[in-house]
Image 1 (cartoon, rainbow, N blue to C red):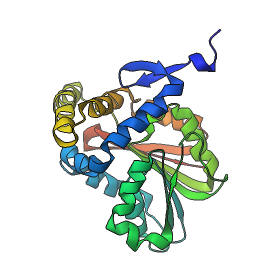
Image 2: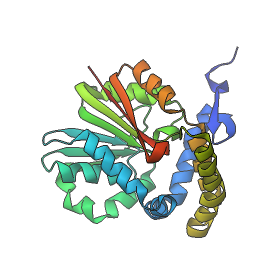
Image 3: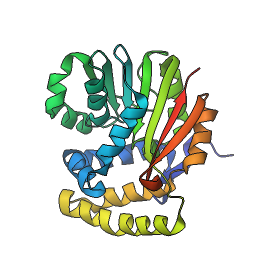
Image 4: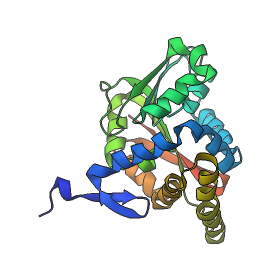
Length: 250
């Protein structure tokens, strides 16, 4: 009978031992950290900024709320949240210290220092007490987690009753022809762009493969419900290239 050490998961299109995936993902983001924000702009033509603004529109941040942004990297979501709610606070949590280092260099980090914290941590074992936060966000990060169900369970644990989960992630375009065209762009352009800008083709090859391995909108919504969240819903962005999923801890 297979034990815990024999379990496998996917790293892009490859099957790897579960115990190795986190280290491999850490290597990817450590490699691209210094050019991560630039590559996001180039890959999406800046559209990722509109998606993050749409996330804030749906979240409607309020003064007094405490945000936990997991896989928060260079702080994009936390900065947006605090700009909309000057009386709120935020904690950015990421497994890759190099990403947090880049975030702390940004001008907004200094301007918001009294309301903003940075911590290295694992989405599957968060270093926070239960019921500590009003809002939990994770953007373009949950597909990289070794066990997504464990990350969602941790999100549920650290939220207070009445707290809200929101996930921004790449998803599936309902139109097969449009999805095929998007895949052609992703697999042929993005790794080459990663090589040109960061000198690292392999990391961006993994990132586009990980997008295709992630569950579709309905399947992921079912996972959120299974973690204990209620009133789960989603909104497609750019025809389903990305999607926002929302849930509440009742």
